[in-house]
Image 1 (tube, rainbow, N blue to C red):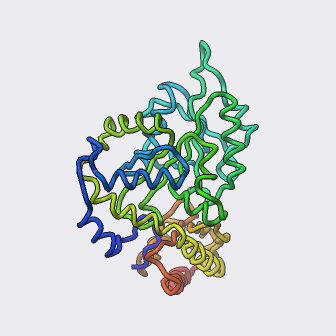
Image 2: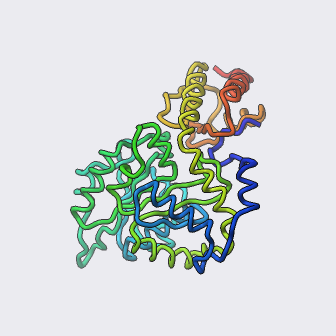
Image 3: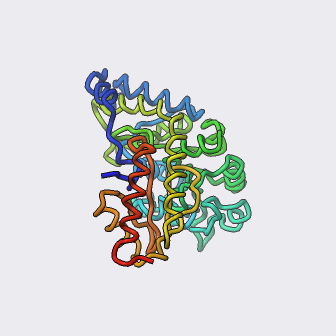
Length: 343
């Protein structure tokens, strides 16, 4: 199987497995795990924040951030295609008691004008705005890499209203590599950031939530409340430290994604715009299959992909997929497209 469903499907390297086995550990709830502490320090340094917190998943990190930043019952401004809206099981409402105020944002980031028009103070009838949540790269919009000036413009507009800003940077380093941007510069305009170790960087588990010391102290309490208080977590933090070293090689994934998109776009009935990072979204409406049927046909030929719309299919490149794998995948996908009378 050439698995292009997501960059979360990577297998930990032998070095990561060795690091997990040999990790120096303690009880992380007591703050005694030296490997976790080292990972948190390193993560905070990378994104220019005062502190960071190791969390099991990106979804948990986003939900914790929302709960720390915003009062229950207030509104969170989010792009209508944001991960926190589409793929986090309604967590903003269920965990943080927030209402979502969605906007249709170009390339996933609301403009200052949209934010000014959407933010409002609490009154007798309205709950008030409690949070702006941004995303970079933006998953559902095709892995677009949002420049720091757009992040800053949106964050400044929210701050004008006293509204904190959280950045869902699950694939933050993909954006930074694509834009040749420093992670700390990208994060500087916002109040907190989440980035994943298990997306693209190859760790088997884990994400980092970073911000001010005060924010992280409260986030640590919320992690405990969410059931994320871990004990000898150094065995999963150690691979995370190695994963951070994979940041620069993300450019290879981007190159492979461009090659994959070009090959897909050359197939009759398939349209695949050139991706900005490692996510390729193909429109298969010109074939004789819907997205689910197209994915099934690919699966039958040992290529993994996922439907993300009625006629759109997502492919992700990652460190377990090389150039030769992309070429083999294209051969198999072509066979799938042209079987059973595709146009």
